[in-house]
Image 1 (cartoon, rainbow, N blue to C red):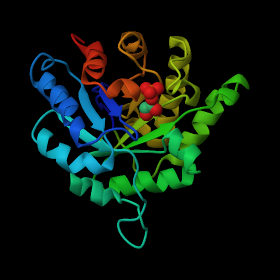
Image 2 (image 1 turned 180 degrees about the horizontal axis):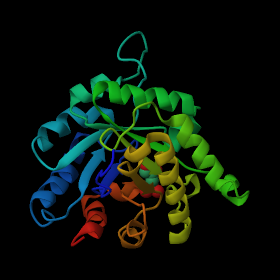
Image 3 (image 1 turned 30 degrees about the horizontal axis):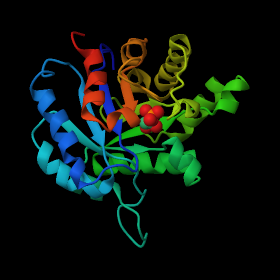
Length: 258
Ligand code: 13P
């Protein structure tokens, strides 16, 4: 679309992974209250993806506020004989507005392929959820100089048809940076995000400029401002530092005054 707005509203998202019980509601309410209080002027979307077991109860606490909830995975089908699985429609019904798909831990632990990730992202869209599609290279792939080719291949194979800035977010998460305290240099992040941006434009035309690209992997309060100021970094997908409201909010503050 000609004349489409190029500006992207940042998204700071927390992935709680397999952490969080009903009692963790206090972290959610602390984030919620900060977003309507001291951080009310911060122009960023904010989302927490807790375990599926608590989405419905947390949703009641954040209804009508700036804090959105996401899930961490979904099945590709809407319903059926798939014991233990959860569909995108069920997550939507529980109060999620987004779902992370293709996280490297699921690709590694559950052997998820990019084709499966693509089907899950399509399921998210079918259900009216934003798909947060994760991609990223391993340490070995980086050492072999294959980062850009791996990320590009994963991206193209993991995206369903008809992606746009409203229904899809990309999360670039180098596998070796997750939970390790290691982070790429700002120029490395810039190079990968620029390549992803170009791929998105090739795939989706002008819409490719409106799709947010998050960085994930050891984002902490003390490195957030640097990482989030890199070109084409439209926010963060935060793991460990999203479990405590104070740490997570310190990362959101990187967008204060922006
Ligand atoms: P950490 O922030 O704990 O490195 O995790 C990143 C991540 O995997 C988010 O999805």
